[in-house]
Amino acid sequence: MIPGRCLRIYITESDRIDGKPALEAIIDLCKEANLHGVSVVRCIEGMGRHGVHTASFVSLTNALPLMIEIMDSVERIEQAISILRPHLNGRLAVTWPVEMLRTDEKDADHD
Image (tube, rainbow, N blue to C red):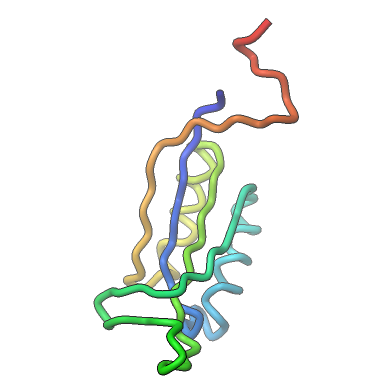
C-alpha cells in the first residue's frame, strides 16, 4: 500500500473561477500541480449554504453539485492545496489520509 491523501472539492456546475467554469479552472490548476487521479462526480442533489440543488424534473437547473476528488501523494496534494487555495474563494475542500493500491504494480511488502 502507498500512503497518500485525498482532496475533495465541492462546487456546482454554474460556479465560475477566474472568469471560466469552475470545473475547467480546477482541472487546469490540477494539471499545473502535476496531480494524478482526478475524478469528477456529478451529484443528483446537494444542500449547502446557498440552499438545495437538485436534479428533480420540477427544478431544471444548471447548478447541480459536483465533487472533484483527487488522490495522490501527500506531498503533491499539499502542493496542490497551496496552488488551489487562492482560487477557491470560500468553496469547501476537505482532505483525509488514504492508502492507495495500484493493481498494476507489485506490492513492495509482498514477496
